[in-house]
Image 1 (cartoon, rainbow, N blue to C red):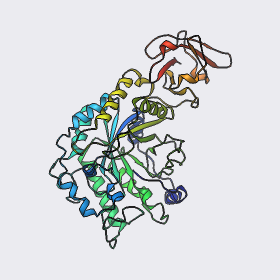
Image 2 (spheres, rainbow, N blue to C red):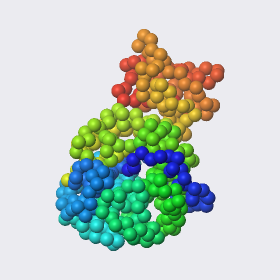
Image 3 (spheres, rainbow, N blue to C red):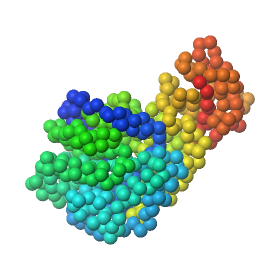
Image 4 (cartoon, helix red, strand yellow):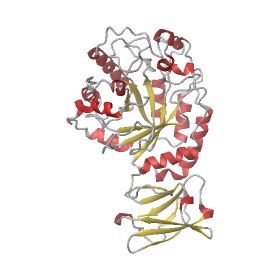
Length: 443
């Protein structure tokens, strides 16, 4: 993942992608619709950097030589890695897909590639294709399988150097983007061929040239090559800009669409499917000192607020070097799953509404119901053990029948609808839930 970038410089990067000529295939549009049915995804940053337990940017942040760093591959042997166990934990949490780092900025491939021996099969004592094992486990469990791929490389001599990875020992005398783009095309073709259930590619690293506006990544050309190989494959890019021609979904890093608290998401919101990515703790890759995990309540609220903005939430976990998921992450997954088992209908397959976020919470809807998520019930008027919720309703949100308002668990609630379209619901304090009290209005 990237660090803070100057947005005014980054905006210049999109000038070469202004002309829109991409027409998604019917199969691609179907994949987009399916992507939006699963509001929770699991992000996995895992590579040989886990051996150092200092996060995925260790090669850059430590300022070490790439050859010294590569020694980690010789000891990378995650004996406790179990793809089926990982996928079961994700599925039990209510996730609909995973996104796994096939290659990060350090240039190490976590799949079997013919482009070099610097990969997990040929370059480590582990000798197993973890991407292949995860792909198979997802296929068996019915989870969508997505792959992260870095277009930035801190070790290859043909990569045109940007503003990061300048202390890794590269000579810099063989920079050749034509050659590098051909390398990326070869690797992406391998991913598509070797893992038939690959449903999306999640690119990262364009921001490495945000201070070099004349550099042309030729992303629309790259995307056209990919779509020619597999038209239905979804493409997204974490460049923090308005989507380029050829992209199928838009992502936001560490912020919900329309927010920019982290300084990485000032771009406009497109009409494409949306996804927000965020960490469970603070780091993306495993960092042994990073033990400050978000609570289950915080993560569920983030998921609900994401769905209310018509966006998926891609929540990140950095697996340990031994192949296990950190215990705090597993505890959060279990907590999210406990909530999802009774409430998933209020986020999966839903869209945003015309009702903006309120002090008390947010709203989502599907074709048959409006869901009122009381994330902060203390913001509601309260008297004699009763909370009063007043919501303005659009014409297509009116309750469909008598006793049409209830909790998701089935308890009916008293309500009335005024002539000017305001719904007033009375909720006893005893019915409040710890994480999110969801009121269902049948419409």
